[in-house]
Length: 127
Picture 1 (cartoon, rainbow, N blue to C red):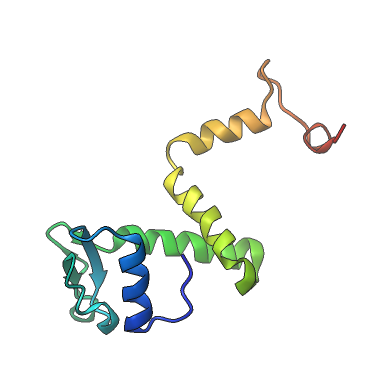
Picture 2 (tube, rainbow, N blue to C red; picture 1 turned 90 degrees about the horizontal axis):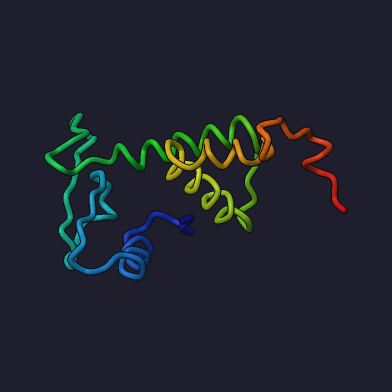
């Protein structure tokens, strides 16, 4: 979800609101994450070239950010702060369904029950 800033107070408040105490939280070594006392906080130290430490890794979120940035650069070119949460939700869906239901969903949208391609005109025809 979008946050207004990356200050410690802001991030801790969001984490406490959305993550159950006792959960494992994996982060990089940004100072704002220090002091997550109610969590099993594991840190990957990017500043010293560490990217995986046991189960701790930030590769999943970095993959998500790469997808969101490609969407910004390649599709939208601008994301209004008023609608940023909607863009993040869209790319969260894409990221979470990239290798499972996404292809099946697209095939249902672009092909009818007889296996024939649905044209743009048919798809956008409102009756």
